[in-house]
Length: 486
Image 1 (cartoon, rainbow, N blue to C red):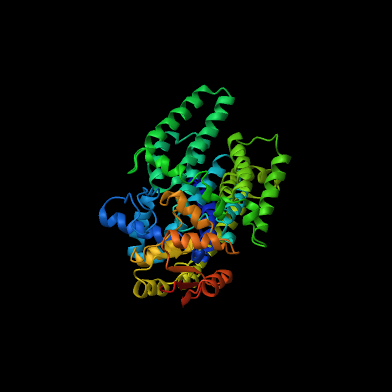
Image 2 (image 1 turned 90 degrees about the vertical axis):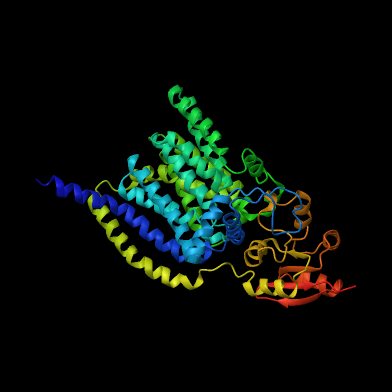
């Protein structure tokens, strides 16, 4: 007679883990909403979405710069751009933040369900997933945030889903359908093949021919699925334009973990890495999915080499970490009491979530590196300028002016601009001015206006004192220099 109420209570207690993660992480993510909007490329993504919706197709050539020439623009995130454009039109930056937080919530809930299904306790799953989901966004390394208002969120989400479905061996046949979405949302879809490859490789080592055949067929089907996109097979040419390109040396998220470490913000991540390595060594002989371990270690080493991969380490390591924590937690812990405590904490988080949103709402806007007022000044006072702009200001200029003031470069890098242009630009970005490089670029591209970081005093000294330019406008963070007329 009591089985019904007990079953209901058990489900409520089980939901405590999910409610805890959903609400507490939600508070954390919403409280960092302004950082989520701090991605310098968000402006051009929204503008691209507007163009796609207006014309009903993706543009094959850049409409906003004067330097891209005839080079094809490989917009690998066209679907995300269009979706974000719709959300922004209807609900502004609040909606963009909600969309981003929702992606983070799905990742957390999926990882928690995965940990529970493989046998981790509620306490261990909550600790492991909570820790991983606190750390992988890397809010301390803005603007290189991996739960940000950008297409990166699609790759984070699909990478976790591919990982989980392969680990559980349940929904592998659905992966090609998911790949159809992934390939149109972000160029990181190539990571899906790596995940499938690791699982297929382990199946081959175990001589599990049945599993190996499934992974091989899934990989082939996923490849076919990637061709279902407006760019066709050229989507791989677009991806190749970013992987291994020389421009990566100048983009911080592609640089080493050491180069991106900030103190004290990086201390929790360092502690997590040390704890994971220590637990792995201590419980090396204990049961744990080999694929989860391999992916965790591979992305840990990759993350030391290039910072962007460290976030995947945190996500993939949640499963082995949860199993290891179970071996450390006291056996006398009452699982029902733990779930009740998590449920109570989750309810507190639900109450705090609206307060976190109201507190953060006034800050939900694009980065202030260049304001709308700065852009409007360019548009009204210097509409015919041959503008050399700083890379980080490019996406914001596109958002505010929509090509009314053609720009020099922006974060689309090799997917939109020729290599020679990018080499010329990156010769200009050092703090100490290379006068020959600046003179060459100004002459080569007919530059008569420069929009650059206001704090760059050596550039001001070079342009104003040595070349006779005039600082015509000074915003909060940017200055506009104008060449004197001959």
